[in-house]
Length: 147
Image (cartoon, rainbow, N blue to C red; front, top):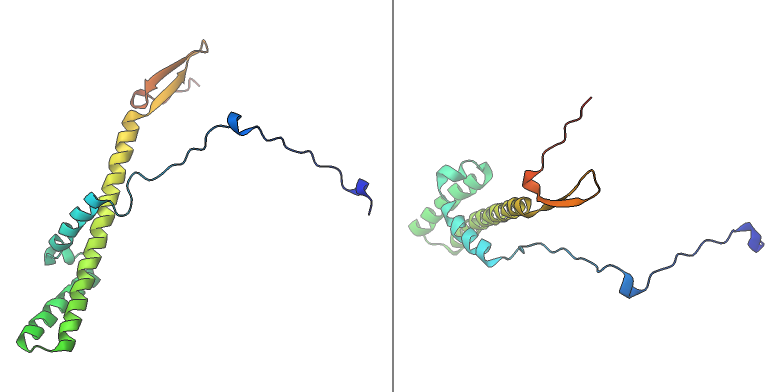
């Protein structure tokens, strides 16, 4: 095949590194292992053991009832197998409560961050004469069309 069958592609020019805008990396403000969220979640894991709260999560409520029954059985007739099953059931209930509390804590932290960013965002309003004015985004109102 001849080279004329494929037209030459235009080459893109890449600007030198010093003229390129800096890369902006966004990181989440709170990590999954944020100590303040984990401390609060650890306490909430035990608070959520209240049967009045657990009844709203039927599967975990049944596991909690099973934990109570196996605990009573273990103290009535100690047995290694019953003891291990009891520990496993309690660990399951506590971990589920802990995971739920961590998710709630992260959700609240994210909502606080969004609320704060809404208040801190600055809008650039373009005036009819071409000038720009910076105003807080909380003062923006939707424009009404005159039709």
